[in-house]
Amino acid sequence: MTITTGDTLPTASLLTMGDKGPAPVALGDKLSGRKVVIFGLPGAYTGVCSTAHVPSFIRTRDQFAAKGVDEIICVSVNDPFVMGAWAKDTGADAAGLTFLADAEGAFTKAIGMDFTAPPAGLIGRSKRYAMLVEDGVVKVLNAEESPGVCEVSAGEGLLADIG
Figure (cartoon, rainbow, N blue to C red):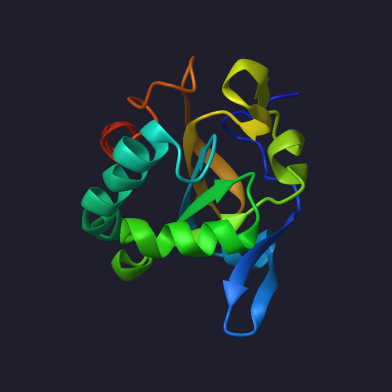
């Protein structure tokens, strides 16, 4: 079942690169009592993800903050080492975005955003989406029809829908 507006996000343990290596992050702790943007994408270092999706949230970070968003989180089915390096390489960490690895894809599957595209070498990956979550409840959800498109799920697309 795919998550939809009004649903509460499931509990999940994701991973981040800490000073001493991979460290677990309880998603519920990040969401409790907070307004958070979560965007998911097919993979670190992939074309549209690197050239459009991540940059759109770097560009719009201050606009989201002005709307009361506490944190912007990028989730991808990758390992925390890759996500940590990609955050640095894109400038997302310097911009204040949080990159979390869904290494097993459990969160992505639980919200119904998983897909597989063998010809592209993408197995068990995430569809491209962006959502506004308040205290764990999905308030706005924008999902792309194709993983190669970044329009409604871009920072500007989500901003337009949250008013």
